[in-house]
Image 1 (cartoon, rainbow, N blue to C red):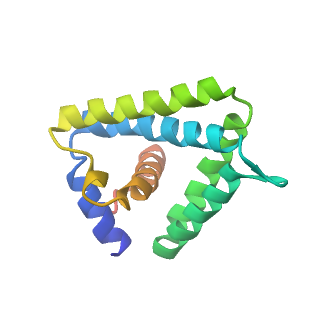
Image 2: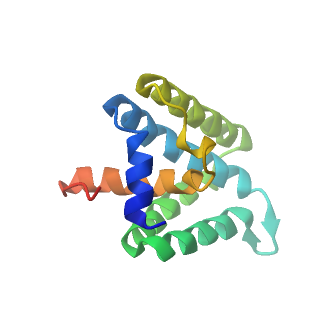
Length: 143
């Protein structure tokens, strides 16, 4: 699927403003938590958080170079924070992020899109990062 198709499908499950706000907080918390926990697993001089982030960014670049570059900046910021967190805080961020997600979908009245297709676990951060960036700079939404 193309970025436009993925975003249109994802967006149809995230039309409620309250759900999007919950996701704007929840998704970065989930990514922060994952990075914090994955940072604890070292593969030589490189930790699992870096390996996972690079793999996700390669996927993003295949569907949207602009989004991949934006996500690389967000990932770098979250990683810089995550690598300094105790594992308990990382786990708490991960759990709190999912609470935000579930509350948002309660507002929306829909199930999370990833329950139909796991690729949306990767599309969620890309979508939210781009949506937030575009809102901050005042750009028009592309989907």
